[in-house]
Length: 274
Ligand code: PRP
Ligand code: ZN
Image (cartoon, rainbow, N blue to C red; front, top):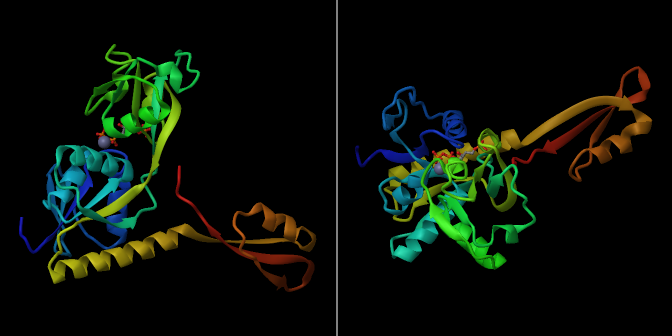
């Protein structure tokens, strides 16, 4: 890998992969990701894309192995807590909050578990990859439990008899459903962010990063803001506006040859939370 090329880590397969690749494409980064290769080289920019497990991304950035990483806030926070305990480097910059990757970090139990509140988990075993965030939550709730750290397939732990409950990331909920589990407590809400290594990049690389950040802004604001246009009876104007989220006033225009109806135009800001 050349030092001159910007190195970006993305999740190989999982919740963030598709949206990250879409965003890179929308930013004009041409790269062929239809191979199994760990590293893909962009055809039109001095960029190398590393495809790894999401859980490895914060560490790669904090160790300066890659320059940028697309990662969920929860995974970043967990890695920061883990490294702080181990006295390993944690420095990094979050350079952009992203409008995708929304997920919850939630406690889940078997569908037939009689869950009455966090106290129902007292002295039980909870499987998770994100032990530090779980520990913080359980300590605040003052509920003693046993932690069982699994780096993958957390959702099969209850059925396999490894744990009584799990704490894992939930995006669509498909994984929980497929494993006969129900989400009972949301302990963290997260979206994706773009993180950059702490150590300064060369001027050329930083220029490229700045260009990418500007493009991300363009892509995100184009997505976040939609116009709606409709024709409606004059008498219903206020009622219609009150149904639309936000406090923006609509633009109202006369319709030629129709005095009862108006043309209404309103900007809508869409939120990307789950
Ligand atoms: C997370 C989590 C579940 C899945 C949940 O995996 O561990 O497997 O997402 O998503 P769903 O609610 O849409 O089914 P992640 O993307 O972090 O992949 P990994 O387990 O390989 O790290
Ligand atoms: Zn993961």
